[in-house]
Length: 577
DNA sequence: GCCGTTTTCGGCCCGACTGTTTTCAGTCG
Image (cartoon, rainbow, N blue to C red; front, side):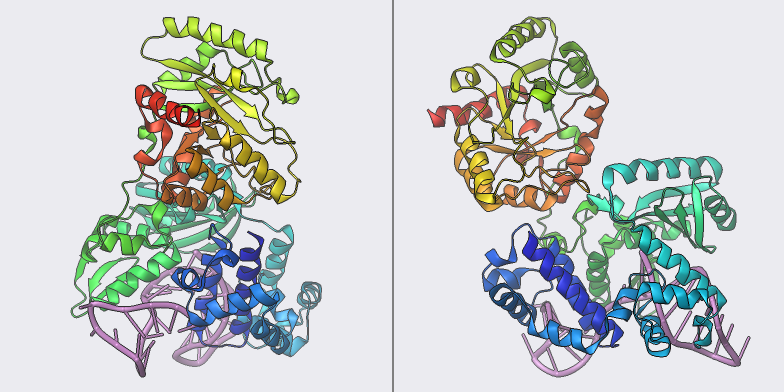
């Protein structure tokens, strides 16, 4: 959604400019919130009506008009005008951690530096210390900050950061006298990428705890070291914040540090209106400062008159309204998953035998898997010829008769060829229990062509699921150009399920697309795309994305027990004939 | 700039840490 990114970037830059100008802080927040919410949208703003634009949280008449102006003219007068009012330099400086709008402006006005290089030079020559309020230490910090910007630490994928965070938690538990410790922040909300790790803990001796934290072997640099809050950079580059609070405040602190910022603001707003005060230490009555709760997160919500809102929903995308109306979804859990519909064996590019896969799945409580080795078109993955596929089917039948309480469905991950044709004819597909189809080539084709390929696959009565529908690899490869509106429309029309692929770099569909598909009544399938048995355990990433997409058990194909699954898979075939 | 069963005008979350300060501003989350 290029247009959304463009507009989000413009609004975000406008917020920066307003900050430098020391404009109304609430106006600045309004621009930032709008930018964030537009970026997270699953539809292009250019596809939305005026009414739909106004439904986006944080978009009012003014910003809706600006969005429309940009769509129609390709530029924004207000933005162009603003750019003329503030020089480039201070805007660049805002990217430096610890350097905010006030200092950025001061540096520009006093030293006339306009680029990071000039700023670096000035700091090295100790010219910054001539400015009131800036000393030697600040000079050092600015140099360090410039270095951080240069190294350009982007947001890291969830699948990389979560294991690191869990490792830190385990180590802190071992070394420090901790009562409770939890991961908070966007990591707890399971955003697909995160910027840093937030931890919240209670400890008998906070000072000892903090000393332990900042001296962990994986810590590279200590940014901040206090008794209740410390902040470090790990050797491999990730930033980690640790907050230590009294036990009676743990829930309030966890809630506060989990965010999102937008969600917190909504909660505090509700608190203020109810004559309450909400901070990281608890929820208090304004009149006499009596503490009404805070040890558990549930306390905070209860006092506000809300049910507990799961972390994955806390994005200020309607969850507070839903909670108020008693309409929060009963989110799907990993335990709801009854089987995995996307598994590769050593017959194509997987590692294990059918039996090993079956045992691995059974050990995880599954009742079935679908074996979906690649089709012959995918030569690099040792795709199966029709002959091999039929041989596989016979072997599976024999194996299934031996397995107790477990079934391997015979399937394929069939390649959708570059010309839009399918890799196996219908006579072959008819013989299979499950057909998932996906794109592995021609990623740079024009949008219309890729869309047509996927649509053609969905119109085949034997195709049950489209795997990793957008083809992205987080941080490595963008999604191919595809008209997701059309894909979703045809998925609904044909009764084709769409996959949420749990491979940590795919997470494809994303949360916002998953939510939209669910809203349209399209079935989702949460699959791990196993090539090695241990990858069965990545299913929780897919479930997290599903939860962020507001999905319930009933929205997900592979929560069905085997008989119901077979029935569901048969529906499209019967309809298609 | 947004937003509304207390408001269509007047609100808008709140506290910790740092550095350069003789009491606090700036930045961050």
